[in-house]
Amino acid sequence: MRSASRSLNVELMKTRNVLGKLQINELLADARRSEGDAFSLLRFNDFVWNNGNVPIALQRWELLHDPSEVPAKMDEPAKTMGKP
Image (tube, rainbow, N blue to C red; front, side, top):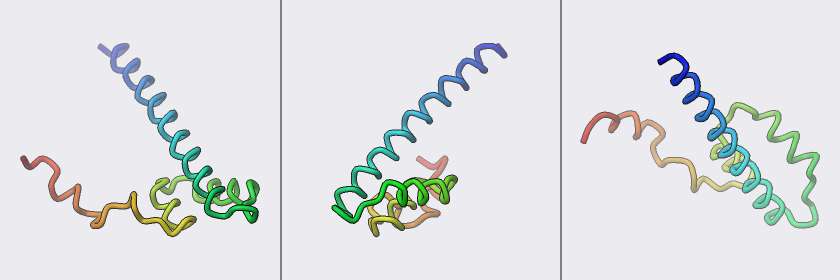
């Protein structure tokens, strides 16, 4: 059972890594589009690295002023969790 659990954890980690990469690539494309000729890859990389553990949705909000991926009420999912 321990081996199956470890295998599942490895697969979940791979999935999270791929999803994170996709989110960062999308943020990069949107930042490029938004800033046009003023875009700097160095500035973008510094921003992402300096905010490393901050969810991409919140980084998008700060960088692009786009709160569309941030829930209206941050505590909403916790209140409804486990209720039908």
